[in-house]
Image (cartoon, rainbow, N blue to C red; front, side, top):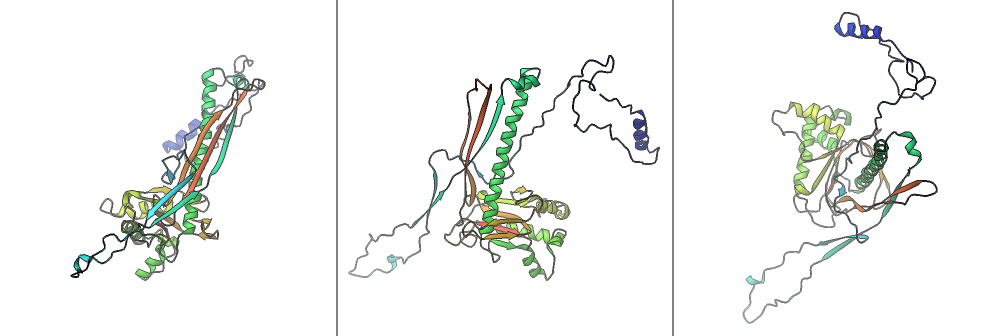
Length: 371
């Protein structure tokens, strides 16, 4: 192993930190390990007799559990039995004349006139399976470790990485369902609320989308608009769905997802100037770093879920919807392990995953953009 005496570097960085020397470029090339070393019995020996091979003193397993950022879209109640999700709705009845105030002498009122409830049924049919597979060798892996616990830690990381991939796949499936719903809802500033256009019309300004993110007054107004729409959804009506049924969404059943770039602007441009805590804050929400891909965070391209037509949008900053409007059902997640292959001394573990994504256009759903 190459040895580098660094007393000169220590003296230089210390004197610069103390302010005793003029700041100068520090060259640590060759001193900072980049982790690309290939061990060699000729080079990686101790410095005394130059024969004994140096040992690996510590092994760092690179693993962190990943948390799905769109857990609010994942339907927690698993659907293990059956194959179809059924949703039944009853139409609101219409008011009729109260005959108690129209009594006629010598006539009777028929109390047996039938008024059947009008039911609507939706069947969400579909299954979307995928699978992960990992092979573990009982024999060959032992050669890389000095103890059973060390190899056990390695195997734990292997399966942890599979778990992270499953969690990331859930998140990306939720993104696909979410952007598909965003491409499907009605336009004309009903379910797609054009915040910038509306603000410019009300104030007589001509802010661009980029300028909106730097304008305190706009950001305060935009938060007020989103919170107002949250209030609107608690009223019975059909304005914010496809118009097929009258419905409402209580606050506790609302899901608000906000683009993190927009939320950070609220923190740095707007909220820090608010004197009253909560004055310009959004109500309960989750943040998402991008809708579809990190290189175009506020942009998405998706097919209309009903017509199949492609839809593209820029400057999407938030979505507000009923919890029953959109979701990803976990229909199956089963982990099965084979017996050990006696000839090859290995075994396989299979992760069988099946999801069902759904979107119900009859539930409230609103998209907010800076268009």
